[in-house]
Image (cartoon, rainbow, N blue to C red; front, side, top):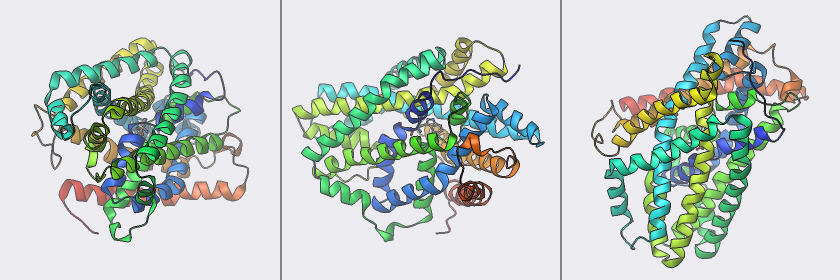
Length: 454
Ligand code: TRP
């Protein structure tokens, strides 16, 4: 089928949808816990550094492929490969992205299900000292977890099935403002009820002794994940961009908003946790155990602030989930000529099965290790986030830098300055592929085989 696709009917839709995509569990659940695990300040500074030097250039490359190719991730790459006389096998980069998106959807929905469940748990009040036991009990309950993730998955599928204007754009217009108000309210509360100075110091002070390959990998991985790079979301959203919108400006706005919310999330969580005497290094249970304990200690106020915090997380997760489903829905509906409704049903059904596996990884299959990874949930997370996203990111970077150099036009990009344009192409050609592949290799050797260099 021809690669025609629809278009956003206004100029802010891309900005809203891409920001809604970028700002998600990665910012409010992932960023603070990884910063906490990696010692705070140094991780945060590395993160910001990589967002600017590697993230933004690759982000622009992904949006460019979509905008220029004007179709789903696979067809866009095929079209551009043809026009630049490159092999049609480049489409594997698009397929890799779609594969990553399906796997991410499978575990993302499960964490989001936890979030909704915790909204209710914290509203009904948790006894001080009981948060860890509550988490263990929730995690052990296969059917309850299945109920919450299904609710989340089916409602995000419903929005996607309704199309890009009546579904995605409409939902983002109301979710995003809510998200910003909530995150600012949470920062305000943290500043009043917690220790703001301690939080600020934790987030930004440089601790050189924490420097290691692991910290660098964590910072890059987090940057790419948080910006929604590497699974076709940005290609799909970019393909709906009106022709007069510029890739560089739009990308810069989205990346700034995304990084801003990650930092704000840190400023909402750390002052509260540190102020009440908790260390923020609990790992991925930071929001579910540490923060639930914080809310429990706050008593009646906690029963109000806790649900608000989890509601914020749920809103952020919902707008991201929509964007995680979009690449495969666009692919099926355009490439295989299906209605969006039908395409969404297939995608959601498939993600449902994957989510069941990922729920089982928390309880019935929690000792079923996959290679060096503890359980199927960890394995999915690892394979998508650390393995596939960086590979696809590298592929896009090489494709745009090396194969599309002649196709890039300053007008679509909105980069008139020659130096900046050359710098962008140089980063795509040399800096990001080499850097990403070195980190990818070191990280995989360490995690899969236990081989460490530094
Ligand atoms: N960026 C989102 C977050 O921070 C998650 C996400 C949405 C994503 N779309 C993506 C991650 C595409 C990688 C690729 O939670």
